[in-house]
Amino acid sequence: MEITDVTRAIAAATSVAASLDLPADDAVVLHDSNKLALRLTPCDVFARVAPLGQEVAQFEVDLAQRLVAAGAPLASLEPRVEPRVYVRDGFAVTLWTYYPPVPPGPAPADVAKALKQLHDGMRTVDLPSPRFTDRITEAQEIVADPDRSPELADADRALLAGRLADLRRAIGDRGAVEQLLHGEPHPGNVLGTEHGPLFIDLETCCRGPVEFDLAHVPEAVSEHYPGVDRELLDDCRQLVLAMVAAWRWDVDDQFPRGRLFGEELLRVLRAGAPWPTLDTVVGRVDGL
Image: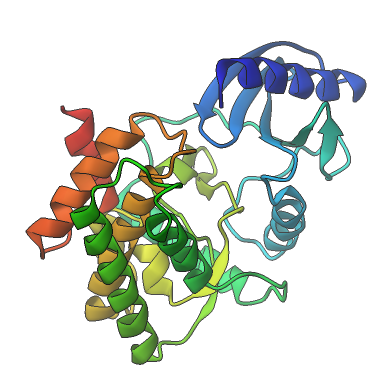
């Protein structure tokens, strides 16, 4: 978010908390991109704030309640208030339980076990959701429109367009079983807590093969997940790299160091297999 939007979003979240008798004298920004993640104190609440019309907050609240009831390893909504979306000053605010981090973080085997439990729980939930191909379409639309990606070079535009189309077709032709997925279970969306690994951020949930989720996790995690189709996982990893590259070239992208990340992803795609995991690419960018 822009600085002025961050200030307004924090004010909206603290105002909502105060109206619910949750003292929120201070707010610590935990993550800032298209939405804002805050720790409100002294009430110790985790708040997610997004501009109205740019969020799927109600879907996330509904799904979280069903998954927690099914025993899925998921961060819970704040139990002291009604579980719903609060609208304030043009922002959608949802309030969640804050979990103090437990260093050094969850072990890969524990994350894999938790992700399998999450997938098992998701198979019990009947809730309308998009397919993973909808996310491919979003990336393709950015690449196809120079007004949305004006700094993307013609050769790179052709590379991404071709790769997205080819992988969409190749994965679809495999006919893999599809189910509800987290959508982006990367390390940034997994909390290491005293209760074990807990997943957050359900707004990217979609239907697809489990390998699409596994394409977002470190290699050490996917190695502990049972029954993985390794060839499908390779295709999904390449697909995720191409999609994320497209999003980083979106003129409205607010991801920190997004352009540098986009350039590195293009280099990775040009270099070819073996396909690195997203956390490996992030590590390279952070080291620049």
